[in-house]
Image: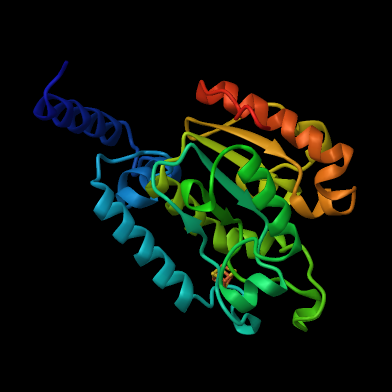
Length: 252
Ligand code: SF4
């Protein structure tokens, strides 16, 4: 393997050759520049061997920045930001769309009616809330005409302004598996929609297996945890167990 000195000499030689042939600049792919200059916590999926205490502190620091954030219009109307909760190194990180009314008031993810369904799913899987991580694509509540009355999905611009927080959180939390809930989570993380076709099929996010499944609010509209859709989600979770090399609890 060439030494750093040899690489620099070769690059210098190449640039002199380009200059002698009339070139006055070299195009560098901005993505390469970004990758080289990004802070470690911003490098998607590049996990530095950071101690848990440091990562917990980093998560708190990210939550602090979210709390001060006004990078999109949702920051002007929210009551509380909802950065997400859970543990480091969990088997599963659930990712939803964004806060609704209850979440906006309490500053916690999935505490409304949808949250009850997610809680039942997590319990059925043999975990508790503090044994997984629960986050969202956007951290502030999105409502129609910013009136804080009727929830809506966040816009592409709002997701684009917020997604870097989730990227940073994933690199600190380091889940074994990601489960995206619904279309917005799918779009926010992977850039495409179509949850009905995509659910139950593995994707990969920066080396982490990711399972797309339905959002709990969609289950609510289809019979809750007694409906057919819940069992479709459960089928997806059985694949998650398989990926983790674990068996679902016997009582489930
Ligand atoms: S949704 Fe995200 S980007 Fe927009 S204000 Fe809230 S934290 Fe900032």
